[in-house]
Image (cartoon, rainbow, N blue to C red; front, side, top):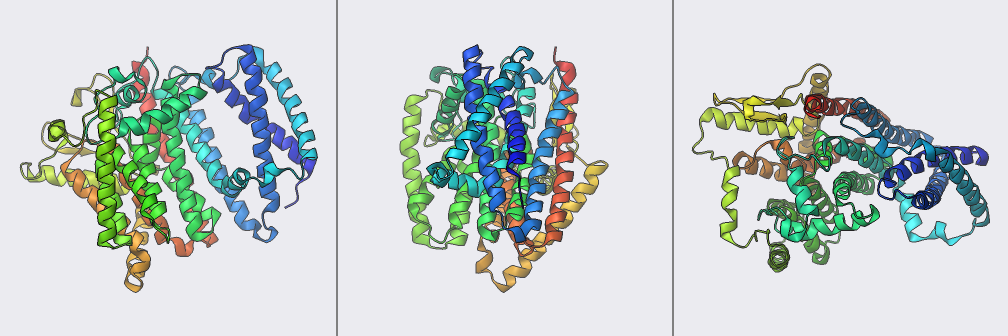
Length: 559
């Protein structure tokens, strides 16, 4: 693939200018001075120059005889850019909800920005010419960026799109809890950003959440000149991007195929579950990251406890029940009772010690080692033995649909007011009406065809798993473990929880990874890759429509 240097310089200047324009515009909200604008423009243009230089080198280094695979990589990355464009285009139709000026420079600064960009770019071109043998290209960090560029690019588009959506639904003066699929953005914003003595009570099912969540939000707020509100929203969206990148890394390592790895990463990142929980601040994107990290570690040939215990502690500290998932993954893939016992004991001992520290630092923390702390959890319990048979059946139906369908392909959301006692629109995928009947979300039009296609693909993945498992059960132990974690989640949430979309990241990762592993034998097939790409394009259109429905529902309630 031949690239003329002057043509590349023009493309680099144009694309780098666009990226730096929006980055400077965003950061200027937190650094409003003119000198801050100048420094940000120069710094970000330098970073963009180095970034696009790495892209140029990757394109040049790509094997010439694999251009077809490279084209599909560009198509998948292009799908991510399309998703970002469609998200911003959707938001532009709601100026009362989405502050477009938050991401754009004031007209009086545009000429100065262009001048500084041109000057910085000219200086960088000269510098690159003098640095052909420089060490920065050979550094470990540059090598890591070079190798992981596709996954990072796709993750970046998801981060920017979901963060932009988050700013439309959550504002410093107006952030709600329980209205969007039972998510609690208001409560979690308080827990992540409020002073220690003003933090909302942390339930014991999140044993170490204060210690895990607050430090990274504080660190990110330093970049935003101390603004913790947008730091929390941005960090939540970044976690969604981290899940995308880790998924890409997982399948790239297994298949050595960038296109297939990107497709699986896109499937997770564009799933209804991950879009919703990347937009609405909660604890569940933290959970998804912890579980995927553990999954990456458990598939390695060497599984030292020195690596697995911190990952398990991370998962336990965010949500206790997720620790059980790590135990399932560990036991099925490495059935050594003594090792499992050491793992569980080590995590629990460290958790008690850290929970004691958290309880000392944060007065509103309910320690998990005190039985009385769990009294509030009864409010979320569903008693299968006392419920009517139709209620049990309705709950099972809603949960199964949520796990296998709603988590990936967004249905038409139920948007209710007086039916559930909401004064502001409440969106959900099911509700239990006064007649004791479960009202469950459904699909219409394009969504109905898309979910039908998804169920065919998923059923085929299940058939491929059983076919391969019969031949080589040990080789598919990880798929078996993922299926068992889904069964665990089904059993757990038949007895516990409200709107199932709230908990969906706890099983969506397992569903997507199970799906991806099942189709690995087709990872090199262009027809299979093309089919999955077409499905992803349909998925992004369908799932963005859910946010359109939400924006239309809440628009009349904003003054």
